[in-house]
Image 1: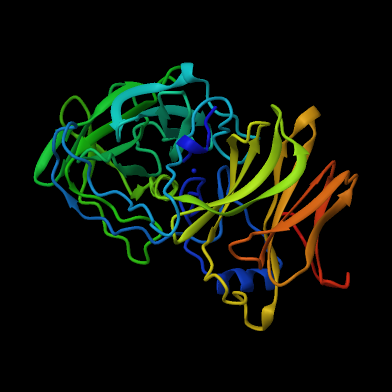
Image 2: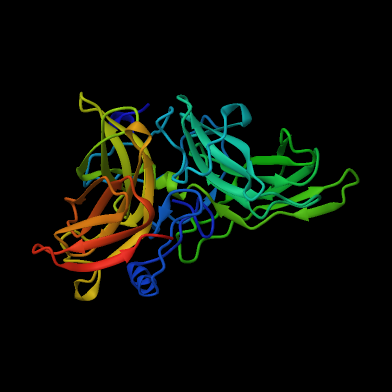
Length: 407
């Protein structure tokens, strides 16, 4: 369990862990086509943050000072997002259970001062995945690299800044005990490898290096990593070259440079594990994360799940769409609540007095506006079965917008 005093994955260019670069004009066009997207397995994202561009890093010992990391914003108190324990579902799609810690492949790689890199086999579609585990056992997922065919690398290389002066690359290879060499920054290094338990002929590899780090996927023209990663057989013959290299720490950087913004939205629903289910926004000045949490009778906040990332709006601008139009987006997220019930949560941008989620079996409905930007609304309902519809009303009860929240 973790509280607001030690608080902290969006995500994907077609994967669960990389941001897709969109703007609200893109969202509006998508709404015109009635397309509502969520991420495949993780935190859903509609707008990516613009993180600092990648740069050259000279590899230094792990005890050295940290490499460049996100700045804390000064407009609101900085509260680091540090998840751990059983109250940290590792991503928003409950159909993909978090791996058991016994399945972790320990790499010995540190991330910052409190977390470490673990690798694990996700499933036949995602293949190898990586995550950051803290001292309390909380896991922050990073990114998948695919299940490779025999004699080949997976579909990509995952990369991140370890905040200790180095660059970490990891991936998968379809072979036992592969010889993998990484050339970057004028050095050639041997990557560490381990077999994947229960999957004969499948190995994971990782390396800590210097040189040029890849730019974040949220950048329009991200910098290219300078690493050349090759696998060799026992005779020194090249079996394959890995790529492409993609940054997987974008969402982690957003989380760690974020603070709670605006008032919490109280639902009046008892959360699983007790306490009231609350919804709140967490952001870094560019991107906001809508987070579900629970508050106990002593006022302590425990984060349950990050639901969606949205661009932090220009407060008081009167709306992001010309003409004051509105849109439901991101789908209807699912949360477990007290008594084994499910609550569905939806988000709406536009001028409205209230919004409502409806469908078969709705038992408890409510909505609230985000105090930092009142045109951004959140609605919830328990007991919904089948398709979910969102409706926005004006002060007189007139319907001003209605849309499906199904993906």
